[in-house]
Image (cartoon, rainbow, N blue to C red; front, side, top):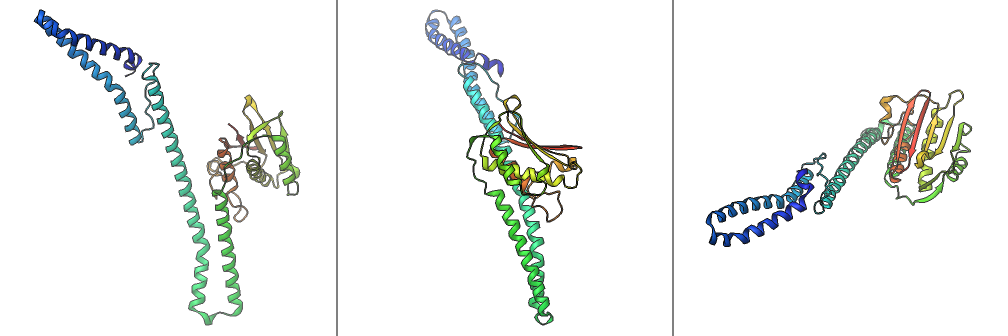
Length: 326
């Protein structure tokens, strides 16, 4: 197929030219020499067959592309060529296939993401609502077996569970209402100064060190980026609680012109089995009730909105979160 496409335009033009010449010569040859006319007819038939093959070539490419999309074939690649006629067509087909693959991957990722959220929501809501149902059923079925103290205790439990539901739903809302970022050129030093002010009254602030390697400027939404960094830094500070000489280092740099921010702490190592889980919504390694499990998921979404990445590596004695910007 590649050999056909390499000189497709010239071969197509030559086939058309020979078809016209041989077709025009057939009648005169038939009058002069029957044998030459038969030879001309044979050559004409061969050239027409070749012409049909050449005309069908781009049609076959289009059929291949449509079948690949229909069969969800993510491996197909139309052979590239510098041929004047086919070059742009093959390039556009591959661009369409690449776009389709990206869309499919994104849809699959979103599907898995929302399926996980739905499972977690179902589990959490069932666990929270079940005690409410049990208590209210008992109160309705046994109104005379309860003292005033029992009723007040039951109402208190119901109230607590209702607040837990509201808190959980508020956490979910935060994951789903992120606005599109308003991108501007922002000096990292300004973002760090803002973070220092926000964190200055919080426990463990004395362990945080902000550093910049040169004048790093980001094309980002400063409010969303500050929110992402706050979540990561707070987690890092909590990880160093109780660690002798614990510290959190926030470093901005631009190696090779690609800006990145790293948040490093010397708290406990995160096990390999948990590294793939920590960015999932509502997953938390903290004690129950001490975290919502959405901070890192939210930070990851913010970096994705910036066309960047958020990754984590953990090897004793350091754990590092890296925010890499496009």
